[in-house]
Length: 115
Length: 109
Image 1 (cartoon, chains in turn orange, brown):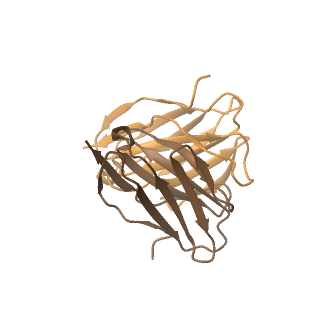
Image 2 (tube, chains in turn brown, yellow; image 1 turned 90 degrees about the vertical axis):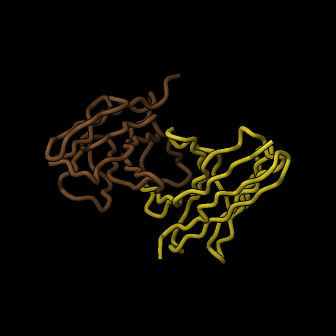
């Protein structure tokens, strides 16, 4: 079975530009979360979506937005890119939202470089 | 104080050694706990969930100590292929994982 897929794998942008990252969850999984991982740190939670509704938001500015589509895929948008947005952006899917030990599985990530 | 703290290491151990990592968390309301393994420039992969009773999977054993608010990961008979960064993750708000910075393990021949 296919795991979580993300596109593109790598991206180079300049300051001030906008970027859209895409994620397809594991088949049957309805919840998608986005994380940002900068070098030397653990992933940081950005958003979680379930059934097309935002269920959680991390401590990120309004330049970050996301949405989920009827087929449960998701997009993360970042506007007005800053150098500090350079990171690995990870998408994670889980079967449902809520509950404990409802494990999350990560996609390979999109490596964004902002010049 | 960080919500989840780990010793960044690196832990350099010979093949066959036993190594243990600890991870402390600050939110006593945390409900679920995980260890992920992350290879260089790759995504985190779920290694194991950490249940109250502890759990074991082959050479890997995870423990939870709620009173002291830490989880541990023990790796026995280390292999070269165990070299990676080990991330602990804690879930209090059920849809948000909070990660530590990771502990780097290097196993040498």
